[in-house]
Image 1: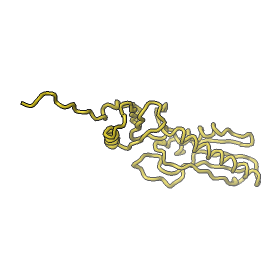
Image 2: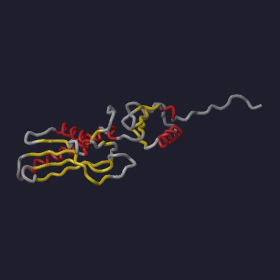
Image 3: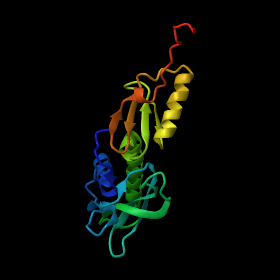
Image 4: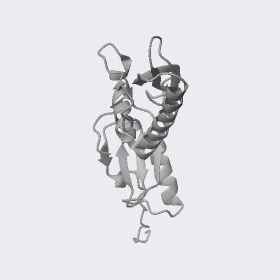
Length: 196
C-alpha cells in the first residue's frame, strides 16, 4: 500500500495503457482528463466496479474503442451507479472491417490488463474499513467495514485458539497501522490469594 490517495479514473486508464502499450497503428489513446470531464476528478474508493469497452466506427473517420467503468466505486454505503463513466478513448485512423477486428483485439487486451491491474492492486482500490492480515507477509487478508465488526471477529478468532498476536491491522482510510493488542482479549489470571 504505497498510495496515499485513491486513483482517479483517468489515472487508471493511463496505468492500463502503460501495461498494454499503444500499437503504431493507433492514432491516439487518451484518458478522459479534461477539466470538464468527470473522470479526471472521479476517485475510485471502492473495488466493486466493472470495466468494459465498446468499439465502433467513428462518425467521419476511423474506429474508436472507449473504456468505461460502472458500479460502486465510491464506497460501501453508496449507491451502485449504473451510468457508465468513460475513462479513456483509443482511436485508429484505419477504416473498414479489418480495422474493427484489430480494435476489438486491442479492446480485449485492454480489458484483460484492466482486470489484472485492479486485482493485483486491490488495496489501492479500497478506501474504507479495516484490513487484518494475521501474519506479516501473509497473502490472505480479511476486510471489515467497521471497527466493531473487526474487533468482534478478532475476539472470536482468539477465543477459538487462533494466534492473532502478530496481526497487522490497517485503517484503510488513513492507511495507518493500528496496534493489534488493543483488540486482543486479555486472559484474566485467577486470583492466587485465598478467600478469608
